[in-house]
Image (cartoon, rainbow, N blue to C red):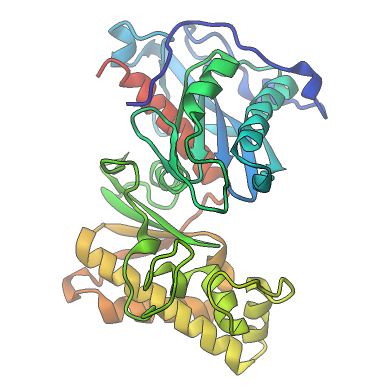
Length: 375
């Protein structure tokens, strides 16, 4: 389990980082953690290769404490009001500047927490971090990250963030967090199991059963993009492997295929996903062919994964879902072609929480881990 220091330390924060006033304190109406009908607050971060987003996630609470708190866990975790979505307050976003290295990224992420506290004048009870890469479930460190995040592998993320701010911190993979947010508060509420398919620059995934993430022995469960796909054949993936699904389904794959490039080749930045979708909508045959091919490839892959996991629903999210109706129709066709007949009724849903999903998921994970600190 992620190591959380449950001592009641004061929070270190940098007031000099304030850039503009915010009225979030009124929105949160925060009280102390041990008073009834107050607010329990998590500082939530989403660290990606392009941007770091953050916000305070505010839970309405009611009198009493959850079971683990009653058993002596400190800081106390009050009982939240059921069926109430927490409020995402003071959303901020800054460039990651990943090319400067992992230490630089950590410093920026740590500073964003300080900025959130300085702007709102609120003191979070915990920090939850959604992070790119494979996150070690035992200690919240970054077990592996690819070359898009140089120097990120090995960063003791949760431990160092906790030390810097003096409050408990936990971390999990970004797609895991996204999935947890959608299952707890978004389009997949009420489903007993859900497979998250995150399709953007790359292809990631997560599997949620009974409201909890299946992380795997190494924290790497859900790396759907690196499963085999027959349409990838001898195509080299961004990870260096051959024949992986990401290389024929992702946003990068769409752009490379349209431009006649290989995965990893420099791409023409003036002709990326949005432009390709626009050209397809205006009737350009080549753009339409590329979207059909990649959409169908993703649908076939989803059908194959459903044959393996048999989820009650599939949640599809990420920038590529904006590729248009042609892409979606091809996806649905590919899914129907590949999935076994008894599974054709599996719900295909599109994420509803967008940028808030990983923040809510990170906050929920922080709450879950604090409640389980004595498990």
